[in-house]
Amino acid sequence: MALLPIITVPDPRLLTASTPVEAVDDALRQTLDDMLETMYAAPGIGLAAIQVGIAKRMLVMDVAREGEERDPLFIINPEVIWVSDDDQSYEEGCLSLPEHYAEVVRPAEIKIKYLTRDGAPAELHATGLKAICLQHEMDHLDGILFVDHISALKRNMILRKLVKAKRLQEANV
Image (cartoon, rainbow, N blue to C red; front, side, top):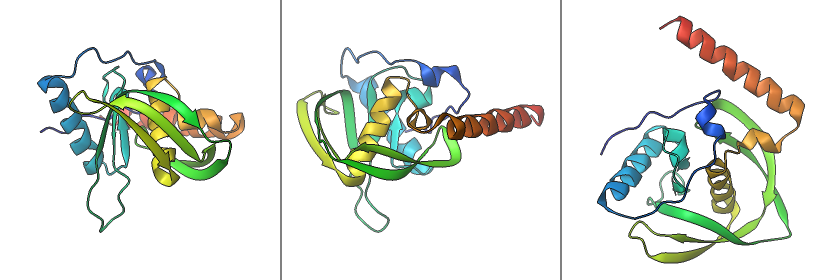
């Protein structure tokens, strides 16, 4: 397994829609394993392929709390088949927007269909943090960032800080 570089805002690849995975094979499973290792090392609870520069509709996540047994999910070509009418608010962060957080309102429950790591069709009904994380990561597959769900003022403040930090980082290299 290998750690993959996580791309950060303002990288334009984060704003592109990902294409469906055509075939689930050993190479794809290796990429998913590398993504999971990268996510754990970051540390994070979810990672979409586009965040490591791969424009394919796949993601990994694990919302197990510290001290709990790991419970990784490998999700390929997810499609929303149901969302609840009830919403929940959660302070979200993102590995591609390091050290920035904002309250985001999303449906409290979601049901998706997807392919597993082995290419088998599956469905998942998620609530709580799992539902939040799943929606956040699926947004990445469509080029949407969590800051796209907050006010323009807050979003622009965060994005300006990230652009400035990137410039400073590049100047020091």
